[in-house]
Image 1 (tube, helix red, strand yellow):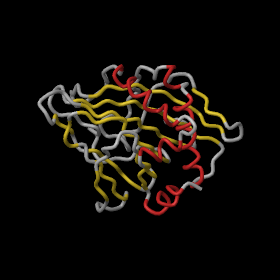
Image 2 (cartoon, rainbow, N blue to C red; image 1 turned 135 degrees about the horizontal axis):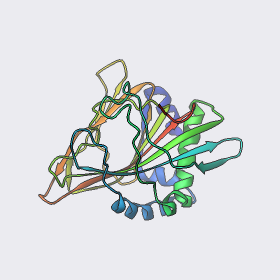
Image 3 (cartoon, one colour; image 1 turned 60 degrees about the horizontal axis):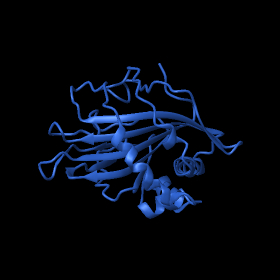
Image 4 (cartoon, helix red, strand yellow; image 1 turned 120 degrees about the horizontal axis):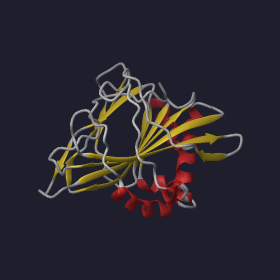
Length: 236
């Protein structure tokens, strides 16, 4: 059992250093960094209901089958959440451009998604995970960038992995994690590229504070967000 599993079991959240993330993706961990340039090619998010233009993203869905020891990309589909989990964007079928094939089929990507799924399955044994992957860029071109415009929230899944890919010329972006039944939690800033935060979505809520430029030039925060759900993809 991976050491982070017990932290996740005890606290509902756990952090991984970049070295630990690279180890999860072994023997392809060193190749993770080669995926970072793909975040420069994310199209704007056309569904922001707060009128902002600070978010770009791509999206893809996968099924991790434990019996077959396989990760399979499924046909492209809309991202959907109920309003009970996302008051701002819930109830809306949001179609995003797909994650590029060269990213989603790379051995480093595949191994990382499988490894996170194995960690989560150690806590909740399941025959398969339904995984949604989101490449996000939040930028400061218009002033303020909001990583979580919906505020503190749950995603309506079983587990979440948030991987920081890069932070460039920004301040802010503090992550906050709270028990679902309490306002007393932890606050920290993911700063190391390829470090990660794992969340038990049934037990905690999370948010990340807005970002601003640290230099007057446009900055950005790139993340990979992976959600794991046992009972199928969320749909209307």
